[in-house]
Structure formats: structure tokens, C-alpha cells
Amino acid sequence: MPNSQSAKKELRKTKIRTTRNSTQKKKIKDTLKKITKAIQSDKLDEARALAQEAATLLDKAAKSNIIHKNKAARKKSRIQKAIAQKAAKK
Image (cartoon, rainbow, N blue to C red; front, side, top):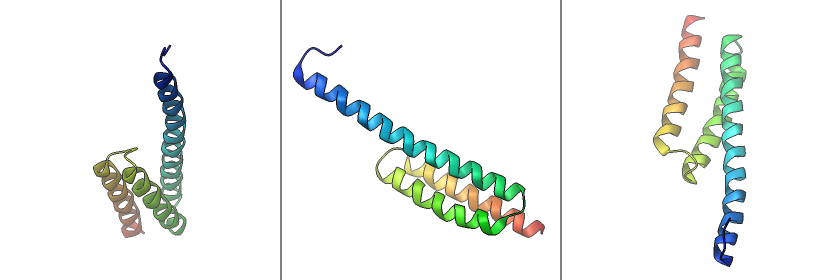
């Protein structure tokens, strides 16, 4: 447990930031799962719409250093690649 006043405040701030960051990460994971399901069930229009939403979430997370910018770029790239491959097979 923190002893000084500033350490107590820092602990409060850390808890708030942790919950904020984890909810943002959870949104990203849920959206990516929805995209995967949409691709597997041949709903490409829905997958494209969700990809736009995921790109926005990933960019915002990368901007605020919740995830690394290269990780965001890699995820966006893989989403687009998966949608394109499924569209090519149709």
C-alpha cells in the first residue's frame, strides 16, 4: 500500500487508466471476433463495415499508446487481406 499522498493519488490514477485501457482493448477484440465470424459466414458487406469500425478503434488505441502503432497496422492489414481473399474465392 502506498504511504505518501502522491503515491495514493498515483494508484487511483493507475486504476482508472487500467480500466479505460482494458475496455478499449476488449472493444477491439470483440470487433475482430465479429469480423472473423462475418467472413466465415460469407457476409462480406458486414465484414467491410466492421473493418472500418475496427480500423478506427485500432487507430485511436495506437494514438493513445494503448497498443503499438505497428500492431494496429498489422491487424488492419490482416483484416483487409482476409476480406479480399474471401471475396476472391467467391
